[in-house]
Length: 398
Image 1 (cartoon, helix red, strand yellow):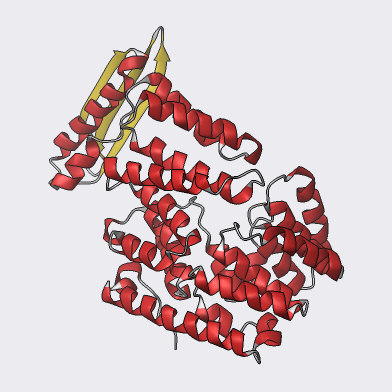
Image 2 (cartoon, rainbow, N blue to C red):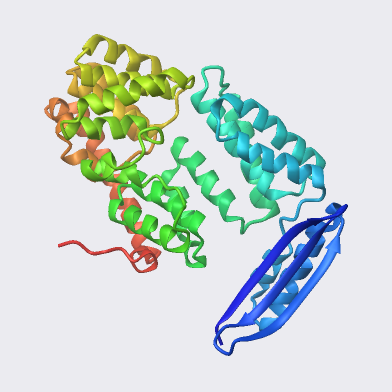
């Protein structure tokens, strides 16, 4: 039996009309339909009942975990849900991050048991601490508290696992984050696979990162992942250059430059700089001035980014190779130590990167590189123990 489930929500007077139907397309028959009108305040209960009626009609053999998931993450009030949705929308605009944070905070005050709001609150606190010059390091502790609360309320909430993993890699816990996500990968959720794109890359598992992206897109074709960074570390500049400049300005600009399209990158970055107020602007300036041949300004932009409280090991790796390429050997070596200490251990991306060649004769570099290789191998062993290649469908290379 092939079935199609359809549902609609329509405003009707002072309420909302909720409709659902189940159709057997192989036989061309309508199996079940239902229409009810409810007030806005009863909307979530009506949706919940609709889902359960569809599941019961199909006689699906749900596990206890799946039945528990059907009963979780329903907001307690209309206002809480409105604040959550508005926060999601405003979180896409860096100029509105503080407003989004306040909305998420009000949401969890209204409904302390709404796990998705806790996860999003953790994320907004994370990015504000990371990218805003006014960001405070203590916000990272508050972010982790929010993530842990989300997972305490719903241990199966995949968006919380994904966002928490993004937080963990910045704090030097990429190995742990990769293992935690891989242990849940059999649930086949696109957000979880999206989280594995970055955690596998941090551990140097580049083919696994690509496979995780493919799995995420198989389940949700429009999902955004960090796969352009995986391509960049593989020096696949053609693919990186096809990504959107405003989403990954630093790496896309450098890939355009590697393909001889410097002027395209420079003009695009100049436009983006006009509207960017976060630390990402200095990444743009560093890339643009490098492409323009202004070594002094490029180094100055890097210096503004790499303050001791800036936690982004992958970003610091990019700036290590940036400084090395500009023959700033001493600061590049110091930065590379921070990269490996921060658990960015993408040894395959480090071993043959030509921009790192000025550092390769330095004992300090080779010491850190060996540490990265050792930890990369440990992560690869953990990945193999979890049958990662089979779970993700990693393509074997000769």
